Amino acid sequence: MQKLAWHNVGNPTTPQEILRLRRQMMDACLRLGQPVVLRHRWNLDDVDAGLAKKCPACYNSGYDETRVDCPVCFGTGYVSVTNNTSGLYIDTRGQIVSGDPGTHVLAPLYGGYDEPLLTWLIEPDVAVDVFRISESGTMIRTYDAQGVAPWNPILGDNDLCINVTLDPHTNEIATLEDRFELKMVQQVTIRGLGRRARFIATYQPYLVQQTFRMEKLPSNSIWYTVPATG
Image (cartoon, rainbow, N blue to C red):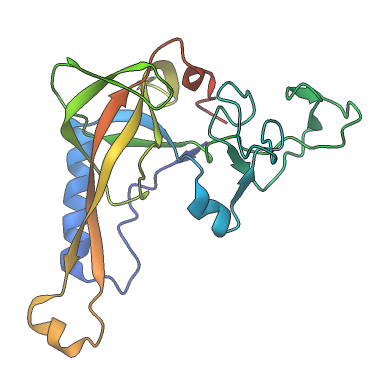
């Protein structure tokens, strides 16, 4: 599992004003935020970028459908293009097994979500009293308020957020808590740099922070089977 490099606020060519804003936001997340594990949910953009593919365990090309309870992609329909090197395969039932069962289909390195990343977010501090019906037909409790995240990594709608508790001595994950899906993610950018902007042919938007809303996932859902550390 990766950990956010908290000293990384941009490359050497990034203007000092942007570096300062990013550093201030990251410091605020450390002081006021919650440690979380983020897992980016694969989507069609990742397929086009060559990072993801259709799930080999449940994708039905005839109906262009996937299983919502698939243990490989966790219902997302996509997995990483990179396969594991631990001798894990997918059998005829769509389960991950050790050793080739005769299908010759290697299990992906990552299922429906990319590699986990440990970071800090400032989550909405409001009562969870808003309910709605999700696409799968389940009732979802929604935080109807905005949270704030650092500029990096770039978040997206439907990304998985797992609240965790860290051991105060080792700074490693001690317990796993509630799980959420991020919604209405917005990147907050700064365009132009005052007088210097007129000398730039193409204005460069600089990302300084991100905002989002959270939907609490049911504890009996398949999202609670997504590994938090690998």
